[in-house]
Image 1 (cartoon, rainbow, N blue to C red):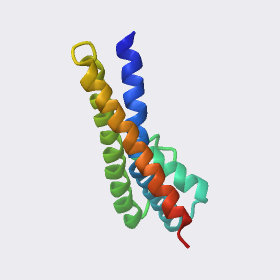
Image 2 (cartoon, rainbow, N blue to C red; image 1 turned 90 degrees about the horizontal axis):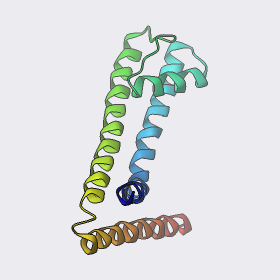
Image 3 (cartoon, rainbow, N blue to C red; image 1 turned 90 degrees about the vertical axis):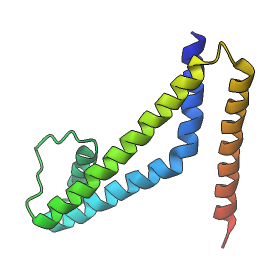
Image 4 (cartoon, rainbow, N blue to C red; image 1 turned 180 degrees about the vertical axis):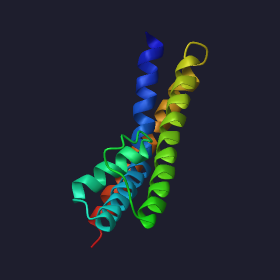
Length: 134
């Protein structure tokens, strides 16, 4: 049970730290979806829907890009989705490895968790500072 709690805790903190990167990748996918929607004469909703389905490599096939430019952009969207998925897998592996070693190295693990917490606080402080700039 301790493994599960530690895994969830570490996963949470590392996702929080990686949130700006994950958010940026999601924004890129959405913006590219809007570009394709304009090229293909789709509604913006359909374009963003198609982009996220493409990024997850699900590809239902209900909406397809017909123009060459749209197909090139779809490859970029798919690569962005692979990077996004890779980041989540790396976070899960890190959380699992930390949780696995909890029993043997509890003080060291708590130090790592404190490091993640302090990184999160630093990123929040930087975000607040950036928001205060004119």
